[in-house]
Image (cartoon, rainbow, N blue to C red):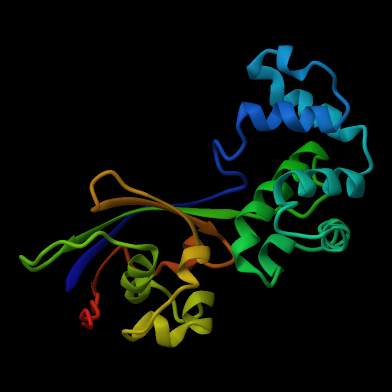
Length: 223
C-alpha cells in the first residue's frame, strides 16, 4: 500500500506529561519518608516529592525510584549498578534491554529535575504526523512497525534506527524491536498520529522531509 506521509510537527521534551500519576507521587513520597502524603493537595504532590527526594543522596534516591518502577524487571544487583551508572551516563539510552528505555527515561528525568541537574538530562521526541493511503484499498490499522517503516523515506541516512535496522526498515521482514523503539503511539482515527520516542532513536533533526510517500508491504496470510 502506498501512503502519503505528512510531518506536521516534531519537537523535543525533557519529560512526558502524565507519565507519573498522583498515586505514583503518593506512593513514592511514602518511600521517601514523607508521612500522610495522601492528605496533601494533589497539585503540590510533585513539588513535595522533589523536596523529599532531595533529602536523600542521589544514588540512594535512584535505588528507591528504580525499585518502585522496575522491581519486577530488574534484580537487586542490576538496580544497584544502574543507580551508579545513572549519575554518569544516560542509561535510558544505553541499557541493552530497549524495552526498559521508556521507564528508565521517566525515572532519570524525575531525578534530574529533583536534583536540578545532578543526573544527565535525557530528551524525548514527539512527532505529530499523518498517514493517508493513496489507493482505495482496505485500510489497515497501523502498528508501530508499520509506522516506522512508513517513516523511512523521510529520515536521514544517519538516523540510528535506519543504521541498526536497515533490513526490517526497508524489506518485508518482521520488526519486533519497533514495539520498544516507539514508546507510545496515539491516534483517534488511524490517520493522524502522535508518536513519542527517545531522541536517541529519532531526533527532530533526523527528519529531512515534511511530506513524502512510503510503501507498506503487507505480508499475505499463510494458511
